[in-house]
Length: 336
Ligand SMILES: [Zn+2]
View 1 (tube, rainbow, N blue to C red):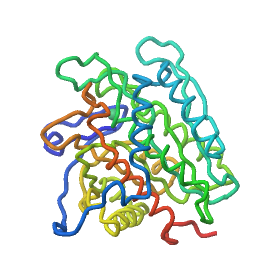
View 2 (cartoon, protein in one colour; view 1 turned 180 degrees about the vertical axis):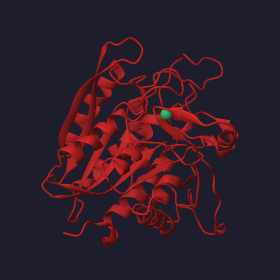
View 3 (cartoon, rainbow, N blue to C red; view 1 turned 90 degrees about the vertical axis):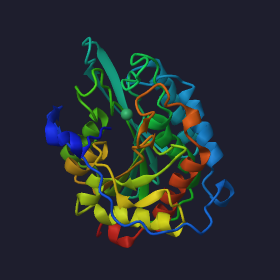
View 4 (cartoon, rainbow, N blue to C red; view 1 turned 120 degrees about the vertical axis):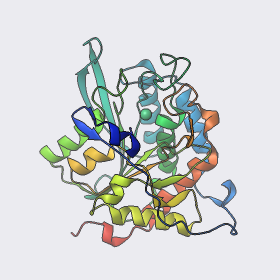
């Protein structure tokens, strides 16, 4: 995913993959919540330690760009994990040309379905490829990038939520979708982002399945030890998606998960754009782009390793999503 500061866009307009990128940081009100107790791992029904063990297992596969050996190991791990938990697995496979040398690269979006017969569905998703190289690394931009936060964290939260989904007592089904080739990008800033989610969204539009998605929630960079998740500006700006953002952040407030900040933050170009703009699904990106915080950066560097993430951050994000999912606001569902 990418962000550009408004300061930058005053001076330059950057075209990338045909898209004009810009961003900003809007500060709205933030209520004072200094005195109440914060939830700890033992308060949270979503298992943060287990989520973190998934994150580490995924990083142990090494770098996982599209078509790599590490990606294939991760795919086998996820298929086995979710099958054991009782999900139905679908694979959306296709081939692209490698952007550098033209050789074929096999891509796969992995779709994990819970209660697959239910026609109204909620989509939870994450990209599961890692960037080929740590482009932002000041020391070695062609070094190894394992993407503990940018790649594994969203996947790990979904792996953990899989333990809770079989027994979800709702009228709607849930699909987890792991998008390939979110950033199969070689020279920084050039090339095609969101290849997997664009493919998924185009197929949903061109060959509409029997089921319909009421809404989509994207998890990206949710493992930072210094977690703070602002409302993502695109999700907030879209009229059909703002109620979704409001409900998720209201859930976080009720749970006293104050890492979900009640402000609008960066504008992020991420996999939720194709879901919203191509597939027409109300969509929200849950992302902590400041990693670890403004002024310091592990994003797209070789420092994006498991020790920069925490079980508690994964637990809190998983808990908010699960509580929101269990008690979904009927206004977010499609009218039958
Ligand atoms: Zn990235």
